[in-house]
Image (cartoon, rainbow, N blue to C red; front, side):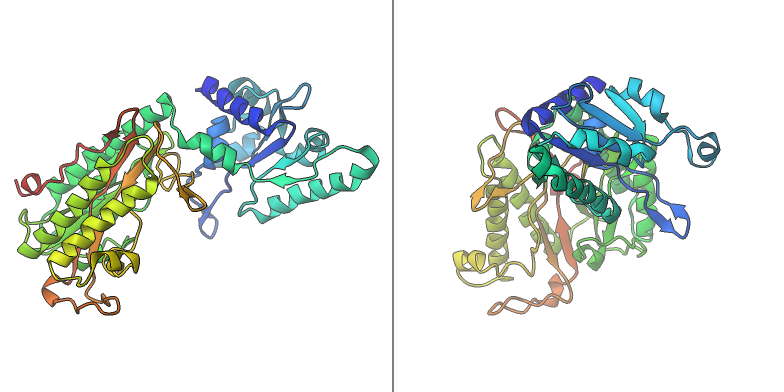
Length: 435
């Protein structure tokens, strides 16, 4: 992988020219008091370095005569490592991560100016670490003050995201290998969950089966808090309490994925816990499944990303009209978004190092066209909350529909000729779910 990290850095440096790019590691996050969450590296930082420790800074300076890639890391400290874990340290980091120079993070303010002073701009994304933002701005201000005397130095601060995130959006062979593994593990977990779920069991018991499978199969853990939502809980998009006891006649919506070697999967399935849909549940499920199948059928290079969502919306509106849950002209309903009380989110998102991965969905008013190597989710849904308020001019919802929530989600890779559904191993046809 170090060869691939180096290739990524070279591609980025080729595009920033005489600029210098700075990347900050993720901070340690506090769970409570002095107890910290497990560390998870910033995705941009990891994508360019593979370095997995906090308190680090990466510098890319393509114009520097000697040091084009520089790391600042925590030095070795036996006493601290006894408490918080081993560190790579300055000496080993140079050899292991291919940096031209490595310094202690304590030397950052002293050493950084030599990599900034001859740059024409600084590439840095202002993030949530305000103290580090201020640190970068302070160095920039100091260099701006010397510009009139020297006639060179960074006169602009620019976000590297448009360049870097376009790179991240197209997955390499090694990235796809990890995404496929994450999908494979999550498929196994979802299939195990459907076998395990039954009336009388609690949502958290199903969650435990899912997350046990993640860890048993070598995943880092859940990619996001697992959603195990029975009954009306499925109408809460990000329900994570997972405390309800499942009842006979419930649908169970499970939205769960895992992180494998930093790459993520994201799957949703909805099924009856007693193995049999009611007439109302079946009617809603059929609409959502058809919406997803038609949306996936659109996926090929050159398709506008927006077309995936538009296709799903039209199928959903047609289905809700047929059930008299919506009334009126289909074009007006879509234009005025009168379907949104039932379907309020988009049909998917990019997937990769982040669950909601980086990359644009449109360029101003121009939709982004799909390209081979992109991976994203396709996840239409219908949610009929007991508290649903219809759009203006739409009928009240008959209580027999209340509490039905259905979402179906797969991870899809755009290929040269179409697409590959990475999560196809989890059944979703009504015949399979009732078998």
